[in-house]
Image (cartoon, rainbow, N blue to C red; front, side, top):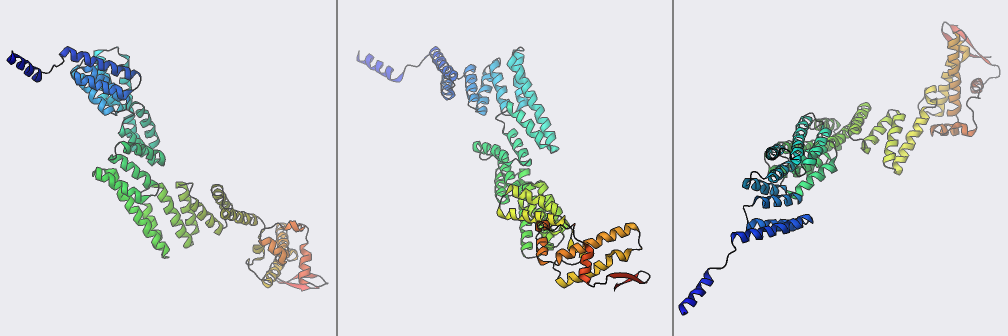
Length: 494
């Protein structure tokens, strides 16, 4: 009796009760049902936990892997879902839903060719399956978008590439490759915030993604943050030493930075010829870097203005604003060159653009000055009529009037044709008008400042040029022109 009891004890200690196979299946089914309930409530994390318990109980049940794959897909964990879907069809090649989920995972990750194979297998098993038919069409559409995007990228039609990638990402939302291509094209189009957003989203999930690091660097590079851009390019090359695009971009960035800095140094030292050469060399490094090149053109324009090559300076500034129409400095530089070359309408247009963008007192004054010069330029140029400089003295103005009045006096041209007489009479009147204004300090000041002379009640159409002539030359007896030889005249008082 004692031995038997001892044995029972031993048996109880060494042989714990294990659930039988049917019991395991029932428990696994219970876990699956609970998983289904959570899945229906969209509590995918709990559903995942219960499907995992079911798999642990019965690791050779294809449907359990299929259910967990579906849950992982809802959680956006497509790579893990793909593994479960593939395991489900390995266990049961006739499992149609398993093939559909495998194809869906491949498609979501951007592998459209593999997706097509999965959907084809599903159709072999169930040729009327509507989902398989539609997904097969979707996969082929993605393949077509990829082909078009590849061709358009080579053509540098970046807008079309972005369009194709947007369409492809509707079917392949987890494809990093499509996202990176889209981000790169957005950067090439100057849509930097959008490009950075896409690249940053990828880096949050995978901080070692060399392509995303390259795109982040590219955005900074094109925004003229060259030093920071180089850091990203270097980091991308650490992750992928053979990354050709990052290598080229890094080399260009370093060269561009060096040339620009050398040009700036030469300019500060007053070596304008060398600065011009360095800025020109920098402009040849990367035509795609719009923002940096705009600054280089403006810098070269400044050099040309220092060299008094004003037309070249205007051309450089125009190139700058074509690249970046928000570049205020280029508009200001060009406007000053227009002022220096007396192209006042163009100067006003540039200053208006500047003032609309930045309403500062300085910009308002610059615009006002240009408008005044434009107004003055449209009046008669009395200095030009008399042939004197704007800083001419009172005596110089008198001498000029004497010379021009005698030159254009109607009596001197009495033998000329009616057309010539009319033209000379007009010039004679203009000379008198010019002298009337420039010989009067008050009127001259108003004229020089661009103010309207009519505001003082002076109607320039009412004065008599002959009276001015008489007053200037004096003499009550009148005057006449007499020939002293062919083509020669002298003035004679009566």
